Image 1 (cartoon, rainbow, N blue to C red):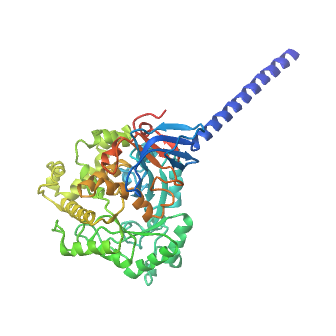
Image 2 (image 1 turned 60 degrees about the vertical axis):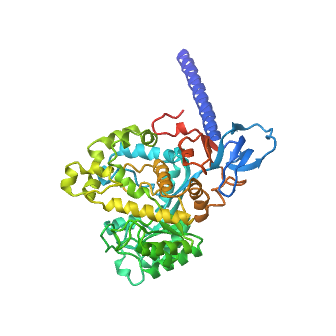
Image 3 (image 1 turned 120 degrees about the vertical axis):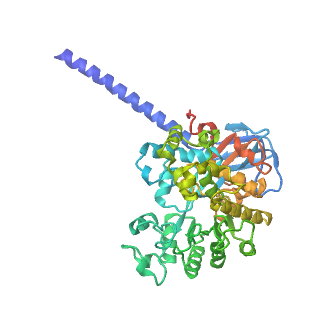
Length: 523
């Protein structure tokens, strides 16, 4: 009996010792992870700084980063204090990019019928923030966001900084035109009920808490940095959707400005941007590709020019978001799903699903919408891909793209306050992937007349200024958050500088781009 007890005691001691060692090892691992999660002190030596507030390069300088912020920029000798050091010789240090128009709740290529495909949803959700970072976007702004979306985003181990605007539609107006009243209440907590239209309020929604002042106060308390409202009467020839009254949006602008919040408005038409100027909003979200009652024109008409001139005179911010229309067309590109860029942004299992009959649902839906059925069934959708510069059976989309490009070129020539936003995904197309969509937006802007320097400014300081973030990001200056990129080329000279990023620095933490790509395992 004693022998048995001693053996048991000895075994218990061994178990206890193992348990103690396991706790000790776990504690060490936890401590190491905690240290790694913190921003490390960092020194970048012999680097060139390209920052949008400076007219010229700052050459051969030392940048020191402490506690996630830029602590010093100097030409002197390096601080002898031990810290992680990067040799920046021959490289350019620039601000991280800001995509000021994204929708993190929407996943490219997944519609209502695929909501139960949890494997695809999980793969896309996990890769989404990493793809933005891979293409240099260290900050994103969800323009129809909520506190829950921010919490979901911040739960990712690695992610760009996230900010959001509160979305303010009217009941039954865009973007909830085809939603039930229950869905409207659930998805748009900052819905506004116009004075005199209280009867239009969905059941359970008190109009007194959905006035312009009330919804602005609500979203401000929730942490929103901006307000997003909508003027959309319909797409193509449709022109009968409910739109807000001018006095309603003027009241919204007044309430938002009293809280220090800028106001964006969805307005891709001549009527919409004319309304935006009269309402006094700060930013017109989307370029002007729909010219009301002038749908056959592709060269700027006197009315279109006059409205763009009024936007310029008001010094409004202007988000072209040209990828919205191009994303509809790109699903007909036979090489898209095999391109190296696509593989950087999209998990392989999702790419394979996009190739499947089920995954081609948007390809088929877009083709049937853009073309007569008999033309689509005979292979007309693939011909549409090559039709940008030539007549097609239904040129509706092509003409809209041409109008958008003509508007952008006019604004570029007149040094408009262009703000960079990709509207990812914008439409349910699998072509509009996080990060990659922004990179492609840059190429469209370049083709439409913006210089690389204008694009660089639009995606950094101009965005930061317009959204009240210039005290934190947008430039390479002492005191700013260390959201930075190390590039091999000067982005003020060529947008190809973003195709081969050397390092992404997020809050002082150095990330290797290859560890962010969708189909390369992280160490």
